[in-house]
Image (cartoon, rainbow, N blue to C red; front, side, top):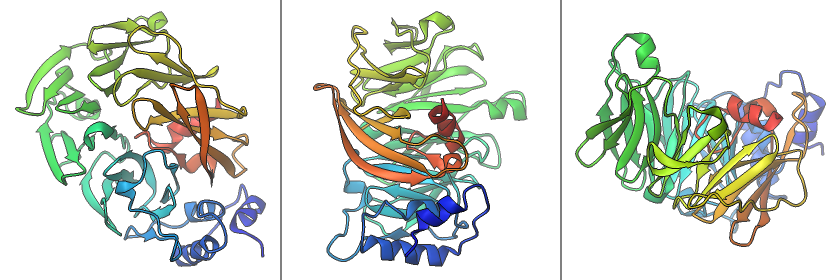
Length: 372
């Protein structure tokens, strides 16, 4: 019998119109005879959006643990209107435009701007808010089970911090002066425990979530883009290009890394990972020493997409070129910084234009990074 991936390879570059129910039935059949991820993902990726988010379970005797209790090292990615999280296929209730994970659950955005959550022990996802459909940006704080975004209320945009474990939400209203253009510049950069970093018309701001007091860190509209916060450390973009991103415990007080692409701090702030055309780099934030793990074998392209804890970096490797027509073959790895070794934890398949990893950014941005 011809598999779904085989059919899609034959039809690459054309429109594939499949019924969602038929695709999910096929997913269940394939689950009974092979690994869950292989063969199912690409077909579900091109299905029409569903009004209800579902979780397709593995066969009896092979049921995975609920997403909230799974290891953060389990492979996770989205493609089209579904998410693949470990051994589960989750229908997103619409095209998945960005997503993140924390130990207590998975949060994603849809093409309509809805923010959705797969509850810790639930079998259905629920909508927990809305965000800008044209800028579906999420930030995660795995150490504290928090996710943050900019809401899309009828009036001025607001900063939202959602405690996934507790199911509670805090909304802090932003300050917007200047109409639509000013509202479009409102952005959440990161959340680390009781501290939120964001931007509005005041500039770069630091919000204490305990009392909602705000400190303006920079009034420049072009200065101080914060890329990552964790473990009491920040990584921000220096206005001096040669310095790249700067890392330190306080904004404006840090050590230049010289790196300029996709910085991510480990959950305890001990390491900073970046990647560029030359590959993945890992440095200690204390002294800038290089501790990059070795990827074996080599891949057409590899990106670091998350830290599962303070010592383990999650990497996705591409084994086929993104030429716009082929199904992309993925390999997921967990790299231990203390040993410098990487272990393959899973595989996956996707179309280049719909592939996304749990980085909180739109799929198009990640696909561009993988093409480099």
